[in-house]
Image (cartoon, rainbow, N blue to C red; front, side, top):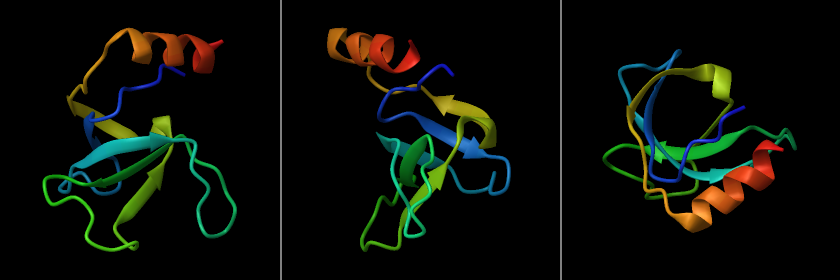
Length: 82
């Protein structure tokens, strides 16, 4: 798995008309299941706790915009991807 940086905007296969922006990694949903990413709708963001979307790498249809990458992200990426 190649981890995408925070701030990346993607279209998901099931909801390609609604882009989402990645805001975190490996969240647990209310059922206790872990996913690769947590995101919010783009451009509106989140205004309550029901606006978070959980998905896996294989659910991504298209990367619309790649988020910010610096040395901290590179270090995190090396840790996650090993």
